[in-house]
Image 1 (cartoon, rainbow, N blue to C red):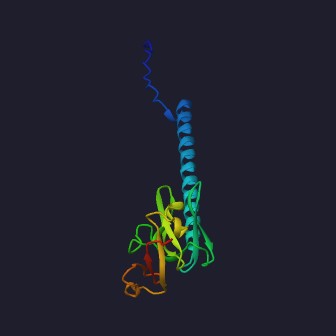
Image 2: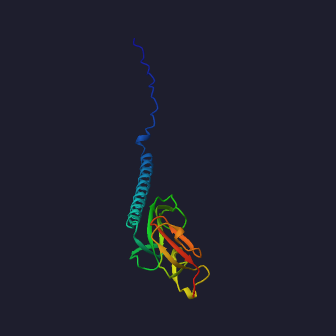
Image 3: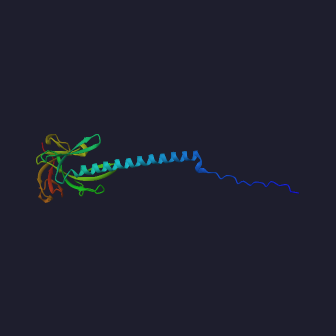
Length: 195
């Protein structure tokens, strides 16, 4: 006789989840990658624009050579420099090009810098270019020097008595106040305005 055949239980292992086949997972990954790519492009675009602005500012500063005469004017973006003839009164002479972190040496220079995102790119040290016999006072665009009528000059005004194209305050008469620059070498002898 034959023995009845007993059915053997079939053991099945539960299917392991296959997350890589899950459509929702890949949708989320795709969205995250798209956001990361867009953010990366934005940051790169901003960085390139800042570099172009910095390069343009450096080029503008380099366009002013030591010895060039310039005037200052106010614009919506701040103080602008314009090359001019040295006979323009008043004007400035570019004395030095310096790093953005440096200061013009003796405090008498007018400093001009271009700022990109709150960081100066470089600086120019500007020496006053004044005419003997004329009167001036501070307070023009960007704190610049203004030509004033000696007869109507205010208390902060001064008159240029002498000008020397060298850095030597001893040349000034005792009744004047020397104002000197090392670059370009220049000394002014100043006095109170007379009407």
